[in-house]
Image (cartoon, rainbow, N blue to C red):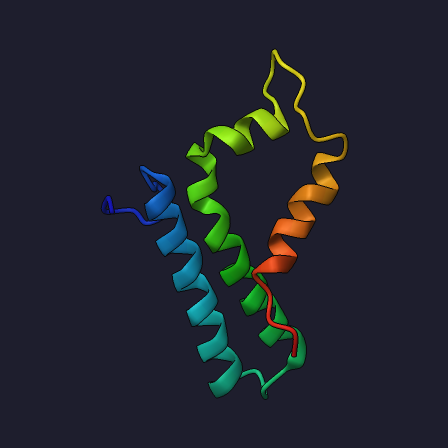
Length: 92
């Protein structure tokens, strides 16, 4: 990772950054936020989003979502993105 963690250079570095933010939020929740359930879910959301970072380079995902010139194959990319995030969330 480059010196500034916000200047990630790859999907893998983005995954590490988002994962670190998730862990940090869990830590803050334990020591300073009173074990807030909202904080816990927010941290889990960051972890789930982190798992999607490798898909930034995925050919099938690119075709499903499209780009600035080509329509994607998925009729509702917003719903698809939310479904992908939900797959990474715990069921608790």
